[in-house]
Image (cartoon, rainbow, N blue to C red):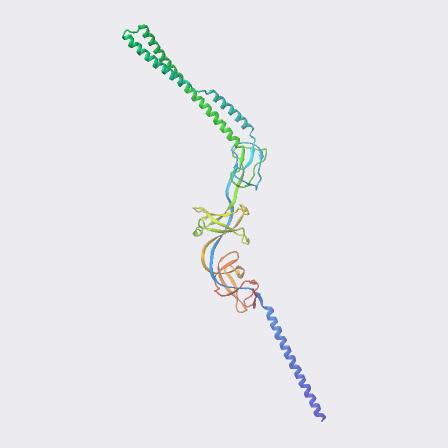
Length: 406
């Protein structure tokens, strides 16, 4: 009886030990599985994806550009003199005709007074010419004497007048002829004198007009609307005619100048639209229109200079600044484009990662046009591919990934 009880106790102990061992195995196996799941989830990279899709894109070409004023005027003087006032500073906006510099005009004003006095003197010396009146009077006297002589001659021939009366009539006729000749000579002399006087008057008036014009030119004005630069004068300075005082640049519209090859001229056309940016990272973009294209290439560089006119009424763009011009080359091109940040690698060895059911698959690609934030994919990607565009630099081929909710 005692032996049976001992055997039963041993069996109970063995069953309990087996049960405890089985329970521990189940718990440990569950913990291992849970740890494995946690570890797997921790190794998954969270990424964002974009579906590749063929679409119509505007193909474009990019050029380095330098900015210059659309119009430039030189400030210079027509007369020499001493500067007594300066009304401008560099960077100042001015209007066409606005006074910028005043020269000393004392000498010119004195010359004007002298010329005005001379003109008045010459004018007063010129009186109304009465020579023609004298000729007309003598002509009338001659005609009267001729009629009187003819009448006396007829009466004398009839014996009705004496020889003395006829001779008196003849003398009057000769005197009338002499007086007419004298009047004609005087008239000719008066004509010559009047011509000389008119020439003197004209010269005096010309001198006066010249002096008055010089007086106006002592005020130097802005040649065009714009902003002044290159100030080159100070008060008290003596300047000779033609001195460059500064320049005025019209920047209400500004030109972006680019250099193009012969092959670029197929799409660089007058009136074509363009876009300008100060840099690739600049968010602000300016609209432009192709204004001019050189008719011939530079004989040394074989390039054509082209100007793109950009509206600049706010004055933000300045001459001498560099930037980028983009010109559309084809508005109806079909292509897949991706965000630039989705592409890794370097020229000739570009790649992307495709999300292949939670696994990052590295895919080599060839690219076309690259713009500021997008890239054209020429091969390696097809419509519908789920392309990863975040964490590209840290991913490896075969990495587990988890797509973040948008």
